[in-house]
Amino acid sequence: MSDAAQPTAAEVRAAAEAVKTALDRHLAAVERRSGEDDPAVYDAFNQLAAAAEAYDELLYDRYDEVTPFEIPGAEDSLPPYTGPEEPNALSVLIRRDYAVAEPQRLMAQARRIEAADDEGAGVASSGTVHGALGLLFGEFEPDEVASRHKEFGLEEGDSTLWVTAADEAAEPGEWLEAPFEQADPQRVICRFDVSAVFDDEFDDGLDDDEDDVDDRDDEAGDDGVRELEEGLDTDLDEDLDADEDLDEDGERARL
Image (cartoon, rainbow, N blue to C red):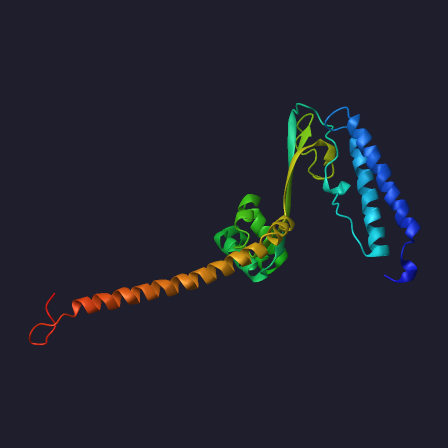
């Protein structure tokens, strides 16, 4: 960043004061909370997160320094639940992302589906990735595609599952034209996310330890093998010396 674009020391100081103010407001909201999902606490949390993020950015731009705090943003958490305490119905919203890693494998699987389906003969839908995907998801349930994605030439991305509460079950065909338009985050009872991001964060903490363990195992393994070989050689030599007793004719005595 150029010097002209850097924030002033006063701006950094003002951002620090904003964090202190937001911190006091958050504590006050927590002390006065009316329930587990108090909207005032939620709002104070978001204000504190925004103030901390702004301060962190200015501090880095001005002094090339960072804070030790990691406060998740509002987009990383769900708003307070406002749905019914005893839902009479629910909706399960699932999103799974895939990359078409091996188009030829995908189309080969689609051709097998076509070959097994007399009615699809001659349609040649398997000749394109678009048509092959239609055949694949038309033949297999999404859960089966998820469990066999490598076989179908797909690579898994992120996935999420939301369980949302409803006052009553929708009428047949009511939401089919826009199935995901009415997803209300404030009615999410629970959610489950799967992402390689979580795996990377976990692996980062283990890589160094695993390397150290592997090195120790290799060294211990080499020393152990050498000691074992030396021990076997010594024992073998002693046994041969003991067994090689000669008779009066100079021949080896029968054991």
